[in-house]
Image 1: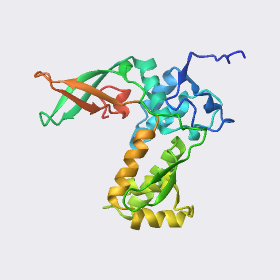
Image 2: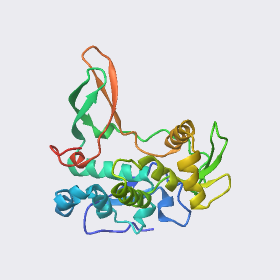
Image 3: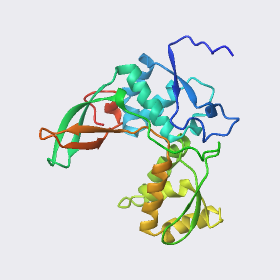
Length: 254
């Protein structure tokens, strides 16, 4: 099959999921995706004050650089992170100056991260079968949950829901419960959204919620977005790599 030609430079990326969580009929099941190199058009997106204020500038950039005929809302969050990382590397190179809070010194430190060394997470995908559906039994409550890993489309919907909820309840955070509602597809065989919401809000014990979220993280294909910093005494500290606006524009808040 002849590779499709474009009027601009492109790169074919291997996705962290290897395509194993997408239906076989979905083009993403190939485990690869084609993106374009950033141009002045994408720099317009990154410099948009309006998009930055709305907190959607990286989402718009992500949507702009996908050239394959795929539904971008289907793309798993871990695969999306890999695409954004590759876009940064192709556009501005591997050096990324970051400021991070050191738990060792209790101060903010600055360093330069080599983004080319960011590796794919080591995830056992032997049980993946082209279906984004998993099971988990809570250790304390013994509730059997079926759930999915979140996609770009889910993230957009979650952000919209959280914004609406926080307008009504300004002193309350809805981050965890909203994400849980979108991930969980059934509780003890009951897939009714009202029942799921009731379980999350009233019955999902904190220790079980933590265990569930840890499990989801452990099976999620993604990039290992962390770096190691070596202090003068030789002690090594690990910190997350920030992926805000400053990921592309040095000097901006990350």
